[in-house]
Amino acid sequence: MKTLKNLLLLSTLIPMMAGAQERYGTRSGHITFFSETPMENIEAHNHKVSSVIDPATGAIQFAVLVKAFEFEKSLMQEHFNENYMESNTFPKADLKGTVEGMSAAQYKVPGVYAVTVKGDLTIHGVTRKVVEKGTITVEKSGAVVATSEFKVKPEDHGIAIPGVVRPNIAEHILVKVNMSYDKL
Amino acid sequence: MSTFSWTGVLGPINGTLLMRNILIALLALNMAAPVFAQDDLLDLLGEEETGPEYTTASFKTTRVINSHSLENTAHGVLDFKIGHRFGFINGGANEFFGLDGATVRLGLDYGLTDRLMVGIGRSSYEKTVDGFVKYKLLKQCDLGCATPFTLAVVASSSITTLMSTALPWYDPAREDYFSHRMAYSFQVIIGRKFSESLTLQLHPGVVHRNLVMSTEDPNDVIHISGGGRLKLTKRVALNAEYFYVPPDQLRDVFRNSLSLGFDIETGGHVFQLHLTNSTAMFERGFITETTGNWADGEIHFGFNISRVFTLHNPRRKES
Image 1 (tube, rainbow over the protein chains, first blue to last red):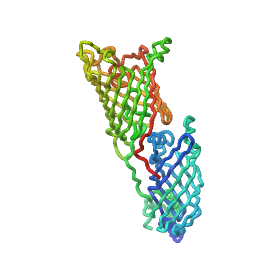
Image 2 (cartoon, rainbow over the protein chains, first blue to last red):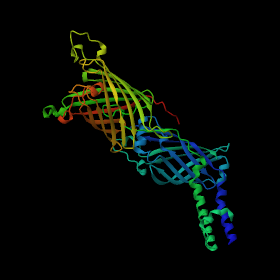
Image 3 (cartoon, rainbow over the protein chains, first blue to last red):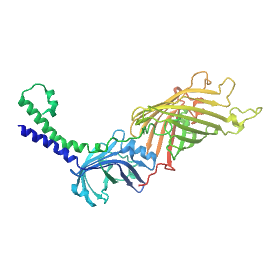
Image 4 (cartoon, rainbow over the protein chains, first blue to last red):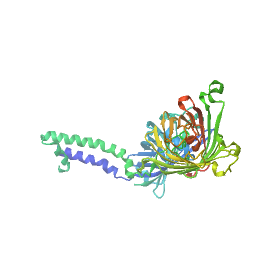
């Protein structure tokens, strides 16, 4: 019984030890989105995106403060928060998933890696499973940069767009992600 | 195992049961640990730095109806305002319920900074030109600071440009000074967005008229007033405002201004449709010269249209 107990205790520590490995994170990632229609082009930038990658488990997480998106037109920004994203109710968009196509060891080897991120994307309180392609670049300096481009349909996340402004907002919003990670 | 001193909390229980409890606890820990690690990944970044976050969208636009709201035009934004008040609806079918006649004000507001806005307007009511400066002293805060309300001050003046002979106080025996045509208004706005749907504000102030009808009439008229909005849907709000002028300041013919209306926002435009007993759309006019009586149907149907243009973007950031 005692051996069993010790064994269990030891096994409890294993994930913690694995977790002690190096992780990469940032609080100043850049996410941009574009909506292009013949009526008007809308673009917003967020330079305060948080994200962490854990190479050991392949886990990746993003947290995006919705109010940190900056628009060229301040009224547009107000409407984005008030009428579309309802950012007082849903302050953050996030993604929890895993990076596939890259081994833990490869994070130490400079190069460009094509990866796939699978996970749960939550925007406007609505979570959807996503599978998106991206690139992770390991610089010679050891820095890790991740980029991705994908499209999001507002209606998929319960964001209602009234008929009057429907022609001004693209069916699919192009999202560009550009993250420079530091070792944590 | 002294490490697990917490098992002592379980109290005196028999050895096998205790052991089983420990095992269950360990097993649970064992399974939970990796999940924890993933959920808390972002915690590794440490405490999030959040700057002060100010309350936004307390009103759809910078006017409740006639009065200024606690909102400012954002820095670099030009707001073109078209105000229209039809005749009294009690004019009956012959006057097409007031739609035959109209008073108009055209205005331009501009945000010099996020706290300071200026504006000018021209009303058909006594051919009046008005201008104002509005400054936000305190901004209600949602996060990172503790200001519970917004505090703003508005100073405005108006000048009637009627021909001397058309002035209400025209008297060929008296010299007509330019200063006679001027009036001023000073207002303090204290308001709070209580919830996503409810915003209330008080906006007491004083109107100074350089020239009044007789020595009996005070030059300064104090008013205690307020307004608010109730958001009905994301894009439609119900607004109301009331100006109470304490007695013995105005002649009996003048009444307190009461307005009720809807704000309808459609992206770059805000349409305000309302009912009001005031004809003028500048302070001296609607605070001290409102004659309409709601009870008698002396109500104007009116609208304000606001269209914004971003002339300059101070926050522009390149990717």
